[in-house]
Length: 224
Image (cartoon, rainbow, N blue to C red):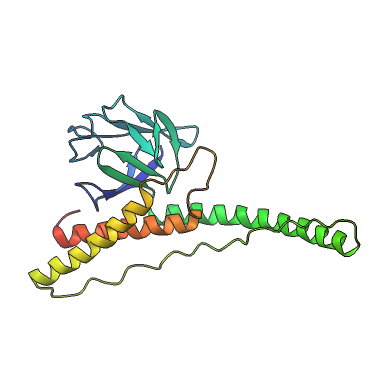
């Protein structure tokens, strides 16, 4: 039985974290779903996540407003750690901090292996240029190590109501900027490239998720 963690980045339930839910998981507006969202644009039973051949498959349950994964409309799609699921006005991030870190590390390792192969090809080309065998050299992109922030700073203590409101306003602004930068990102099946490098994209999503959690803690101190 697969377990899945989902974090709400945007919507009325922003900041909620659903840890290690056993599949199958249903998402919708109605009671009885594994995840009940307070979103009028979400259907009563909107989306199902289930395990098949060690993969998590997302299936839209003929919802009124549809489902997007990484900016694309889907009916059925395999989802992975770090993917974004959009239902109604709500945006969910798949995976815990550590699960997304592991995916980034795996992608970085593959990129480094590919870069090593390209470096070898470049060296061979340079040798041919030196021996006047060829005058064509193809450069290759450097692979940057994915670096994620260690964690957010602690919340200030003994905030007055005005200070809490001011801090919330600031975090709302930052969270809105991040949302605008990510909500239109498109990642097509089988391709790990988006508008920015995947590690940077994930760092933005990670920051957005943490800010969402902080906002929820400030607005609802007893919220889970």
